[in-house]
Image 1 (cartoon, rainbow, N blue to C red):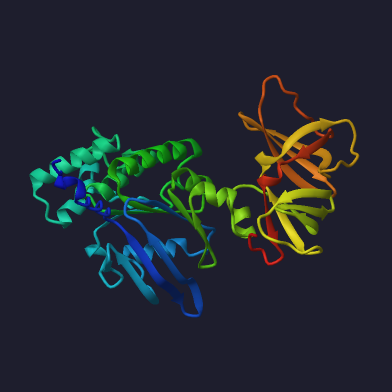
Image 2 (tube, rainbow, N blue to C red):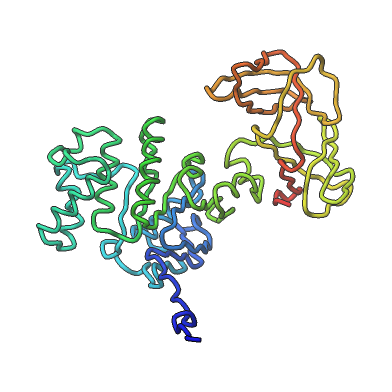
Length: 379
């Protein structure tokens, strides 16, 4: 029997994509104020990562340290295994899209996109080809001779993207780049940026305070809180399995119920609340009498009309105080035992719509909740 030597030769591991980033215990202080506090994070080449958090959480400072516009007070920043935090910004091979786009107002679209190529000494013939490709990629071919003042906000954003990608950097940094656009245009640009990421395969690190934007665009989300990482994970994991009350309340809308554990059988808890006793799921042991906080997403609440306000086994029965129509769904606010709950009901043309003042009963599946301890950590 002949032997094929190829079958015994191990295949080579695929080469890692360029653009891998590592923050090693990065800290940034301004006097006595610490804005980034000992952050360590690894980002794979080709990932789309969103740095998400409220103002003051450290997200933009972290990005600006990676871009080279701010120096860390401590720690190291590595790109593709090489330390970069001591390299000047203009020598880092990365594209940056600023919140204000930072286009040169006295330059045409062509000259704006050409700027990083001239800085790198790219020959003119090659530069023309790269500019044409970059503008076609962002659907701005034909606008080469216009000035930024002659462009809409969305068009300026596309030119900024073309300029950031024209020299083929492995790493693209974006700082609140869609915040100045109206909602519809922002959603359109989200689709285009996601398509651009898929086409180019570059690492994109995106700063935003918009949770919907982060959920839409990202492979992973880094949620920041007071200069520290609160949680890192895929969008669905962050949304469905938050590790703290802070993350649960910052990502999406959430209903919280305070209660006390009555008993536990396996992964099922009976929790006494002001709204009544409810059954929830948790995969860790709890003590009877332990204080907990339960989180339920609005879409996890099933709602139906009720003839009166009497209590039920779930305890979640109350009166409708507000109804909002948002096209594909109805948002109800329901007062239960002095607390306001938000329920999202997918709209049905044949379904009845509850009115303000109606009694409503809410139910939920035990597995659709998260249980937090008194220390606010997810359990």
